[in-house]
Image (cartoon, rainbow, N blue to C red; front, top):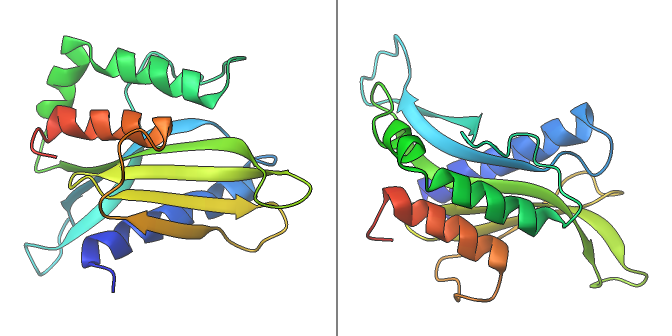
Length: 172
């Protein structure tokens, strides 16, 4: 059974996938983003929160590289370690909290014959849980796998996202 946080993050990943499917040519953009929570304005319950997706504040904004998506993520992660970027993330105005780091990119899977290009949306939340949405072109939606204790070194993308999560949540 998924926790409320896992349900919320999974819903955001599905929404990102659907947006990419309708707004961009296949397989969609390469994107580094954060999911963050904030209060719901004028909601009768003062503890009500909503999750938003924002593009990560990095100089690698065009996120295009001939070296592939992992090279793009490495470059963006290095940019995010800059002290000024760190300060802006930590001191974000208002009661905002980063929930997860997300990376959307194209990949080729050999899990099927012949190999196919897929859209991948990987995420790591503040607790270190890893999420991977994979969508084949001919499918109506992506499938999500959730790993509450991902093994370090199994995926460079997840390792880089985990490093970003630890920058703001040192205990993860």
